[in-house]
Image 1 (cartoon, rainbow, N blue to C red):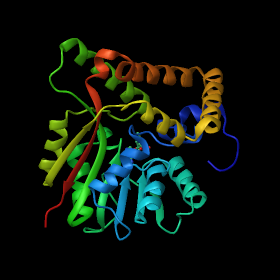
Image 2 (cartoon, rainbow, N blue to C red):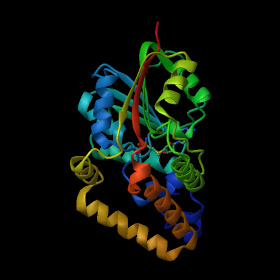
Image 3 (tube, protein in one colour):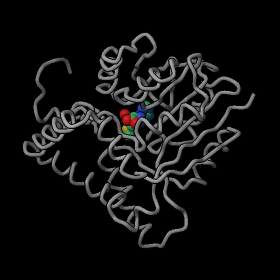
Length: 280
Ligand SMILES: C[S@@+](CC[C@H](N)C(=O)[O-])C[C@H]1O[C@@H](n2cnc3c(N)ncnc32)[C@H](O)[C@@H]1O
């Protein structure tokens, strides 16, 4: 992709996460740095830990983790553009000696058994086949090591018309990202860990945005007024230039409105921090 200016049709052809990374979106998971910090505590990450972040995107959390704990982080993602951006970020944030970023597939991790103390996904496992992915996480973890996931959940026992709405949002995100998006119930997330053979499972439920402080933190970590404005201007530019990109954003917006703006559905969704151990 180099430094040559890309044409609109090349940009239209990009996969969703390459495109968002091209625009300069920092990260995608709800809970932001605060949830990553909580995950670090729950997974007992310290300066001696070797951590794998699967679906690391542009490396925001990987660099953040390396900075706050001093641990060593390898980030892996199937999309190329985010990995290129992550390498630049690690230099900008002066953690290049404690981070490494590679392209690769969660279903076929290029590591030997017993390579990591912790494997983390943030808004990634919800797109994956849990049996295959969790099996891979289990394989590369050492005895006693932790898996930590930050993924969206939906409540189990909800009225049929709300269930239909949430199904619609799932279908919209699946269409936009080209990845099968599934918001499991907290019980289902627990079950996927159990099925892969994990023990000591904890599922912590969180609301999507827990107050004004969360909104402010998200805004700050997205780069504050300057970066957010630049991002919005870039989005608007491509929406004006391309009908396909306009359609993509409109579907994305519809899905987000169902999940986060509709007061009835909003009550029944959020994200879980799921922690589990590979017992010796
Ligand atoms: C919603 S984004 C989350 C990115 C990052 N974890 C964050 O919180 O910003 C999902 C990421 O998972 C990556 N991904 C999807 N399927 C993957 C797979 N099979 N192997 C590795 N990465 C994958 C996508 O390319 C994308 O960067």
